[in-house]
Image (tube, rainbow, N blue to C red):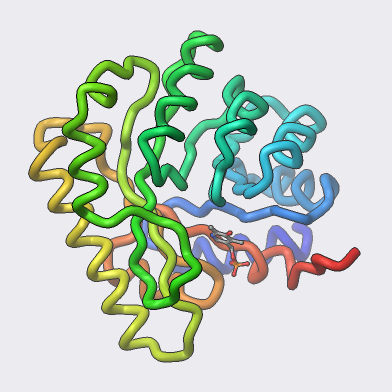
Length: 225
Ligand SMILES: *Cc1c(COP(=O)(O)O)cnc(C)c1O
């Protein structure tokens, strides 16, 4: 097994059975992803549409590609033919565009609603009121080619683990509120995407079903190259 495979195995060994690992491969070369794939990893996360499209074209077809970052509407078309799950839906306009491109590709694309849970200003995401307004709209009800399968959030980037835990608890509460209002009998609505390299243990304790881990698997990213 490769070094990357060892790291994945060690993380998976700590995850309960119901929690899936998204190996975040953004900025990393094809060879690293291929290595993880050869050692059995199937879910990969990317945050740039064109990078994800190019990697998907060069790698095996049975990889599950998850889009994890902020998705611009004019980039949806590049990933609509194959993306398995879009984690970061934070507006009705974006959802409409995903629905449109999914229809063109004769697909139903699964999406998570991204909530703003961090105390930092910079992170994207909806408030509960915004999500309720979106899911109550006629526009949303008319969409046939998207499926909301849960929620996603990013905690503050801090060593204050009490704060991080409180933010994850908040996301779990938002998940439940939305479930109660809109998805009570819906078996597809079940994902809580939370937890990264530095905080996934806390996220798992607080109910995460999808952890998104990059640097702990592939090493630190170098954005300057
Ligand atoms: C980069 C990224 C991750 C992975 O971060 P690491 O700290 O490298 O594990 C997870 N989620 C999102 C949305 C990201 O952009």
